[in-house]
Image 1 (cartoon, one colour):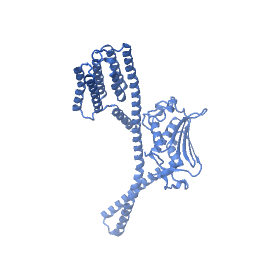
Image 2: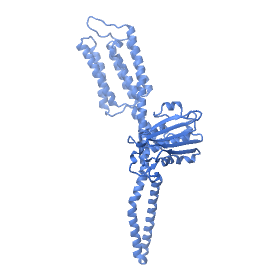
Image 3: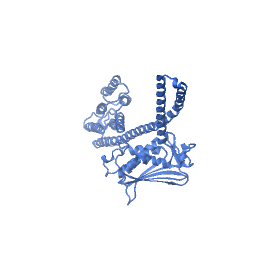
Image 4: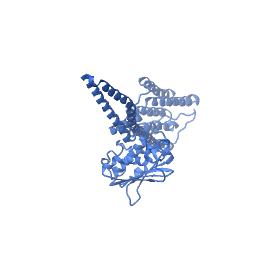
Length: 467
């Protein structure tokens, strides 16, 4: 279910991120129409250059008519399909080519505007469609290098640029199309992936916070319902005592049923209260050793040896349970157990200045490409020795390569630093180290004592940035 939720989220985000808004293209085209009109009018009327003003006006008017038609036909919020966006951008390239044909071809300095539609496509459309638009732009620029009307110039003078210069302009368009297209696509794709991964992280955090709040609500319900339930119990016993043997069979049966249902309600509330006590409660503070035990407890039955060590200088720190941090740490421990050959070592240390957790396994370790891309979303492979089938569930159930990204994001939001490395030879395996400044780790727990810490300063939710 969680995997389906993430896959649906990713599909929706990818679709929304890639589909261009019609209003965006319409506004850009109005800007192009204004610029083209000003350039043609300035050259013809201002400088007196002999260019085919009527034909140029018709070419520019074609863009205006298309814009008006789209504005009337569709709402401003309409998002274009990939095919529709390609057709509109292709129209812009062809319209610019027609205008350049009338005004000197590649000798016209505005020929570099061929890059604009390709750049827009690269930021929002799949690479295949951007490639098609790039080929169209380069193809038309090749045609304009050979076939064009003379460049308008002052009366009595003729300006004809050497073919070598025109070839240089064509080369610039070719290289500019390739470079700007690839660069813009790469930057936009990284931004999309980061936005999608952050949205998935927020979804995970909201889910974990919701689950964590349930036990708090259960405890609150048990507390609030306890008093009226006790009153009902007292009243039922008083009625039974007053009526005694004189009560009719029906009344006696109703009183017995009432007492039975009251006891049943008390049993349910008792279970809710014990559930809250077992799970630590929503606002309970826990010591560092208890936090580690909560992380490793679900893993003890999986056949991997879990070597837990806690030691430090001074009183043991404690913190309030943070659902985001618990999820992130749990994901890292799950990953370590999944990749370990036989043993996972978890070492918790503290000093007056900092609190640290180190999680080591004896598996194959992180792949070099993962270590190079720590913190990036959609990094889903840790070692070639482990196939995707062997890693089922290791990415927090998402199957999208977001597990490490989500864990790192949630943990670092708590004010910690997370470092990933491989064990030094001859040892093998991965090493994950998380370090908090102690004052950050304990800050929100000030004033909340935890009896299990032996008087240690209670621990807070420990976050610098709200989650």
